[in-house]
Image (cartoon, rainbow, N blue to C red; front, side):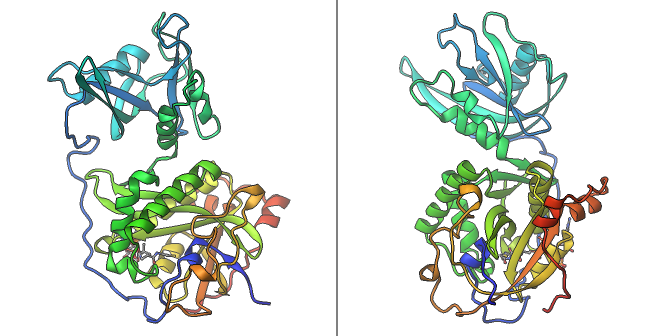
Length: 405
Ligand SMILES: CC(C)(COP(=O)(O)OP(=O)(O)OC[C@H]1O[C@@H](n2cnc3c(N)ncnc32)[C@H](O)[C@@H]1OP(=O)(O)O)[C@@H](O)C(=O)NCCC(=O)NCCS
C-alpha cells in the first residue's frame, strides 16, 4: 500500500534533484547578545503606553471598567500617559506599579501601535509585552475605575469583546497575539499574521531557503500565506511563528506547528526555516524546541511528527537534535485538506492537490518521517516520565527504524 501523507512540508515540496545535504552552506554568523537586552528600538515617541502583562502561562492581564466610567464594562490594558520628554518604558513601569502594585521585570517587545486624533492633535499609543514581579493573584485595582480583572489565554480570548457593541476586535486580536507569542533563549516567536507578509517574503527570497522550499515566494504568495496563517491561528489555535532575534529584532526565519494528516490520522507537525546566513547557529533547533514545548507542555499532544526530503540532512539533523526518531520513508504527496474534529488541516495542505505543485517536481518525491512522543519529550526534559495511557498508545503508532540517508 502506498502510504498517504499530507503535511505542509509535502504541500510545498522542494526540488529533489541534488542528493546532497550541503546544497548551500553559507558562512554562519551567530550574533552575540548585546547590552540592549530587554529594550525596544524606538521610532517616534508615543503619548500613551499600554502593557500586555503576561504570566508564566502566557495569559494576559486585563481589567474591567466600572459602571460609572464613560466606557462602562469594557476590558482594557494597564497603561497611561507619557509625560512629554519621558522615556516610554519608564512611563510604562510607573503606570504598572501605580495601577497594579507590580514591578516591571522586563519589557520584551512592542506589540501594537494605535493612532488617533483629539482636537486636531495626533496621539499615538504603544503597547508592550511586559513581564512583572509581584503577587499576580492580587493586583491592586483603582477603586472607581476598575471593578474586576481577568487573565486571558487561548481558551477565553473572546472575554475581552464584552461591551464592544461596535464589534471592535482590535484589543482582542492584540491580546491573542500576546498569548500566542513565545520567547526562547534567543528568539521572539511571533504568530504569523498579515503584518508579517513582507518578512515572510524576505525569508522565502533567500536562495538557500528557496532551494529547499520549492522556489521563491511572490509578494502575493507571501501575503496569502500570512493571511492563511492568521486564519489557522484563529480556527485551530496553532500555526507557524515568525522568528526574530530578541536582542536586535533581526529577522531569523519562521517555524512552529501545523496540523497535518499522516496515514489518515491528523496530528501536529513541526517545521523550521532559517535564513541562509544564520545557518549553523542553532536557531532551527531553538524554533523546534519551542514548538515541541508548546505541543507537549501546553497543548497536551501525544506525539509530534516532522517531515522533510530524504536528503535534507540539515533538517534531519535538527529533528535528531530535538530527540525525534526516524519512522520511515514516505513516497506520496498531499491529497487532502481534512482536519481533526472539523479543524482545517495545516497551512499548505488545504486546497493543495497535485495542481498546486510546481513545475519540475518529481511525481514521486521521497520524504522521511520523524516523530517524538510525549514520553520521550518528558524523559529528555528530565521530568517524571508520564505513565503511558491507552490513548497515548493509540496516538503514537510510530516504530523507529534505522534511517537511510
Ligand atoms: C533546516 C535548517 C533550519 C537547519 O539549519 P541549521 O543551521 O543546520 O540548524 P540549526 O539552526 O539548528 O543549527 C545547528 C548548527 O548550529 C550549531 N549550533 C551553534 N549553536 C547552537 C546551539 N545553541 N544549539 C544547537 N546548535 C547550535 C550546531 O552545532 C549545528 O552546526 P553544524 O551545522 O556544524 O552541525 C536550515 O537548513 C533551513 O532553513 N533550510 C531550508 C528550509 C528547510 O529545509 N526547512 C525544513 C523543511 S522540512
